[in-house]
Length: 421
Image (cartoon, rainbow, N blue to C red; front, side, top):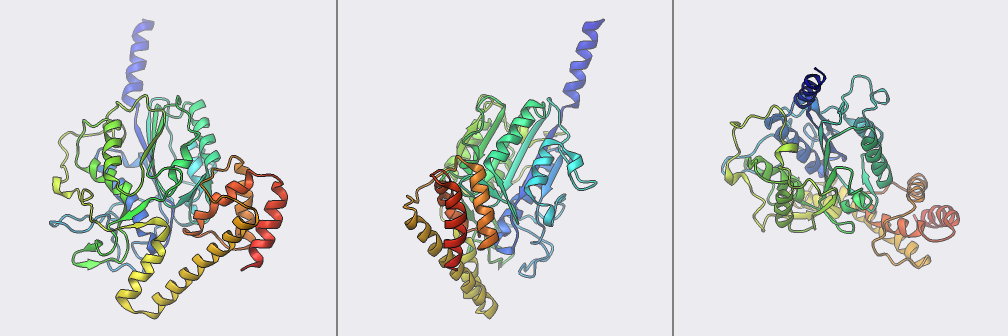
């Protein structure tokens, strides 16, 4: 009898196992249009592929669809028109965490299942040891951190959360796709035996790139004036949309790597299960084999001449393009602000590098507590790091791993840097 009960228990676990997904756009502002477009595209893809809506959790600031700069109110597009194929990915995209709720604390608590630390009534990943989890994040980053609208998630915090999830049987297998500059730096310490597998859009010391940028941002005959997606993200999403259920995670990686032309896509963590098919993570347990596939010619990213922008230069190019198109004084003012902002960061960090004789090479901060402290001091006393300013976090990392940390943090960062403003 006990063997029958054991078999029944195993059967129950197998039937009750579900897939979970956490999809995050960590930015705001219309010039970052592509991040929310990526995430809403991923949401609709997972739902079409049989995910239960209750098991898909979305973070997005939600300031794009109704933005005054959006010529198609209530709509977001992740692809330009081609042969009549372009979907409003905002239509039906259910966003669970918006505005100030898009923050690192909520992100980590959703992963951990700490519902009592979340806003009342908000969704969280209520997973078991039997469930697979897919995490996708699209935004800006720098060595050792990824950005949210008003704060940052540090590599150490992410790795500690993964460790907690592993020790508390929060998943069967977890797959994480990360689209940010220097995204590989978030996974350099990812264990290779914890059933967590990650792809980074870029290696630890390079930018990721936007795509379908002007002039290739035309939807229904009109230019949206911004990048519609990110190169890594739309490559993997358009591939999944084709519906090749037989691809393994390894084959999917190789396809994405070979079609992401301007950054180096990399694998991290536990690669022991990369022979698993992508169906195990991108398709829900309610998956139906007969679902309608996207047409083969819907995949655009095999075109090498599609316009791409370096994520670090996106805001500058956005306002340059807008001013060239409109001649509007407001766009000119924003362009001038961005030029001055970039010059400010170049100047103060150039002085920091020279005064401390820093190399300026890529540096991943071993002392993450110091890095976090330095950034907090800098943003409190000087100015918030912009998408462009984040390129200089590597100097903070190098500084933190040198000697006299307190003197360097307090005196050099706060006093010397801010006095040059």
